[in-house]
Amino acid sequence: MKFSIGYRQAEDGSFMETVREFRKDIAEAYFPWVGQASGRSPIGADGRSRSSARKMLERDLGEIRDMGIRLNILFNANCYGAEGMSRKLEKDIVSTVSHAIRIAGVDSATTTSPAIAHILKKHFPELETRSSVNMKIGTIEGMAYLAHLFDGYYVQREHNRDIGYLRELKKWADANGKKLYLLANSGCLHNCSGQIFHDNLVAHEKEVSRKENMNDFMPYTCWNFLREARNWSSILKASWIRPEDLHNYEGLFETVKLATRIHEKPYMVVNAYASGKFRGNLADLFEPTFSAALAPNVIDNTKFPSDWFERTSTCRRNCEECGYCAEVMKKVLVNTEKYVGINPDNRRVETRPTQ
Image (cartoon, rainbow, N blue to C red; front, side):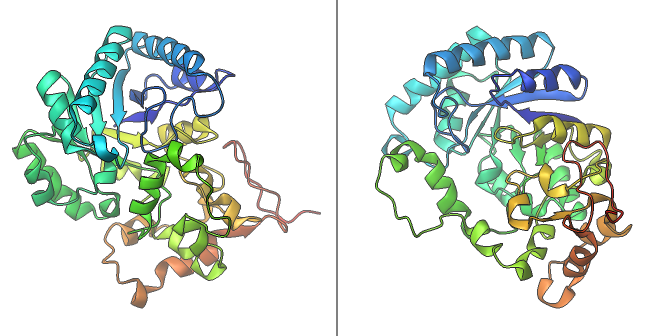
């Protein structure tokens, strides 16, 4: 397996240094175009001019392409509003993809929109078109419904830990000439009831930022829920896969996606999964990460029990009766006020009491 990593603009060049170091492990880089809505904040939303952001993007994409790494363009906003099936949308998509192809070449596109998938198939049939993980396609029926539009599917993350079920999806995909993809380090809660609301807010981030918004409302379901320590075991019930366990997915996925677009330390994430090991605070690998919610506690990745993967990959999700994750959380949660902190740069861990 190789990795698909999210492009992140970094003025200090650190992201491109990561790509250069792990070029043999990286199959592709995925990116949105400058200023366009996607599943995360738009490139150029950090105060830089669109012109400078675009120049950096074009330069970086060219270098990535020269390394032999494929490029995947994103159109994965959860909502395109009144333009959702308009001719203007078609014109904009065609213009953006055509420009990206001229600049560096594009091999595939990922979208949340059947309308955009239609546009891509119509104008760029040579591109592989994929459904975004945010479409939550996780059944054979779901794949079949849109098989005329998509060549590949990011599997609904809630199925990440059901190896038997993933094999069933893979069997159908192989028989129908489709590809499956996996997102390995999502921190999102299992079956999060606030995901659609959150994704819609992100899609309309520009408009939302211009409004006078409520100061007493926290829009993120996860952060509200994790304010109480009794709910922290929900982090362990999510869809992420430990770097040490990823090898179990060989044969099911050729390419595994790592969420690094807004991650503060993409090097740490890529290094951990490429090496298949991580000595540190496991929550630091996730996007979103809940390290701040747990502080001063950390999830010590070295303390997971040997049966973790076997138990969670055959789990029937009867959480109300099980209690396994709650027990594991007691073992892996380390209070850094009592112990030397776990190094977030994946270099060394000290778990002995301070003198």
